[in-house]
Image: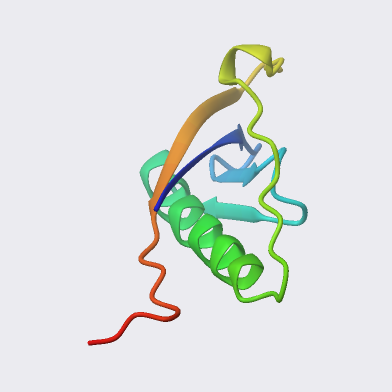
Length: 92
């Protein structure tokens, strides 16, 4: 399965980056550079999705269109793609 969720990244006064996923409650990322923050965002989103899919009745949240997110000065909005191999019931 492939999931794509937007992340809002903000450059801090120290020059590092922090980010939040508007659709994934409590899912955040950070990094010294934008690239590191994007990598951390991918891991954070994967872990959030993995945890949700382990629930008895998982409910994946609606995906906000990247064009509908208002950016503030110093912010970037990017889509994060996560590939998840769901193996429950898989006989190998």
